[in-house]
Amino acid sequence: MSDEYAITASDGATTVARSVGVQNEGMIVTLNVTTETEGETSVRVTDELPARVDPNEVGFHPDHAPEDGTAATDGIVFAGEVTPDDPLAVAYGAYFDTSDLDGEPANAGLRISATTRVSEPESSFGGGITGFLGGLFGGSSDEEPDVPDDRAGGAPETDSFEELDESAVEEGTDEEAAEDEAAAEEAADDEQVGKDADETPDVEEPEVGLDEEPEAAVAEADADETEPAVVESDTAVESDEGEAGGVAAEGSVAAALAAELEAGDVDEDVRETLTTELEAELAESQVARLDRVQKRTDDLRAYVEPLRSLLDEEGRPTEVVADLRDEIRSVSDEIHDEVEAELAELSDRIAGIDASVEEAAAERAAMSDELDATATELAKAREELASDLDAIREEVTAELERVERQTREGRRDIAADVDELREVAAQVESLRDALSSAFDVGGSVGIDAGTDEETTVDSTESDTEPDVAESAEADEQAATDEAETESESPDTETVDVVTEPDETQTVAGDDEEEEPSFER
Image 1 (spheres, one colour):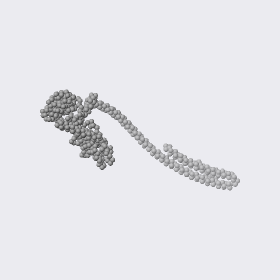
Image 2 (cartoon, rainbow, N blue to C red):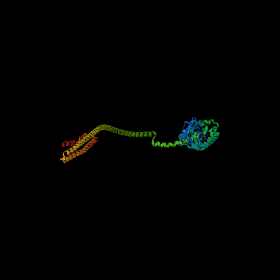
Image 3 (cartoon, rainbow, N blue to C red):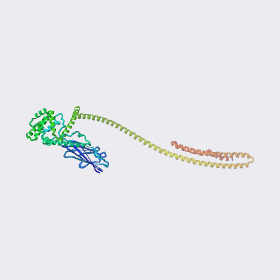
Image 4 (cartoon, rainbow, N blue to C red):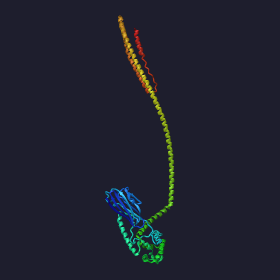
């Protein structure tokens, strides 16, 4: 797919034509800037990009890239210099999807602003015409003359130089037609005068009469503002017919007129008349330049009065700068003092914080030492307690074993004693039977006595067994309680519990053993 779109925009005599070639992968745009204004013209062109185009995907052609050009969100912007003989051509490409473009490049905006550099027109008068133009446009005169609008051929309006839009195509066409008409009228005037309109400065000198002195010409102009124009026009024609003597006299008259204009000695009406007659013969490009200069001069004058008032109120720049420097120096000193005070305060605070930190560090070190010592003491006490507890546990265990052993031995002894008592009782029983059979007469007495003895032996045996068992259990319980008490109270002195055999039982046993012997 390849479509072509074209659009133009103009700023007076300067025109930019844009042609767009759309392809599948993007579009290629060519911008051609031309001017009909003599001399160099500074142009600034803005070409809006379609909304879908990313500025990062836009690049200038290497052979047609401007010296000052950028691609931004608002479009392609570039500036350059252009002359009638040296147009400016710029080409760039944009990569994007063009499948549904629908004529969008043709609807994009194109704007141009042109500024022509003003230079003094060359003339065969030398400094005469230059001095005249200088006095007429910003010389010794306090007021600038108005430029008439009824010049031959007509000049294009310059107010539209600052406002351009998409309708520039139609405006450019109308302006070109107007310029063609103006060129045709100038050609007709040139045939009457005998020179080209662009070369009219070479024949402008005869506008003041050949044989008249400057004073006479000024007086005649004061008397009748219309008559000098007629005389000047006639003399101009006569000079074209070849009067060499008149041409020789023109140099002095033009120089004198220029000197009077520069000195400000010419009446305002005469000045306006001369301005009208001289500017009627200027080329369109010169008229456009002078209009542009006049506009800029008016703009400059609009800024002069406010600037003058500002200088009257605020003083000269050197004084303002000096006052400003003094204020800056004063503020700088105040800031410096405040900063120094704050730095001193911060330094004191930091010193106090450092002292507090050091004191806290010392306290932490002391506490750490105390904690280490306490931990060491606790560990040592724990070890001592564990050792004492192990010793007590061993002692209690040994004591319990001893008590149990003694208890077992006591029980065995008691059992042996009981067996002996039973044997004794058996012997007594047999003895009683023997006695009963031996003593028939005293049988009753013997029986009673035997009965009493048997009862005594049985009661002794029955009383001895529980006492021995209870004594053993009591000894064992006492040893257990003592061991538990020692384990709960490590500082309590260990008391050895020694269970002694029940002497009462032993004695009783002995007595029981001896009693039968006694009876016998």
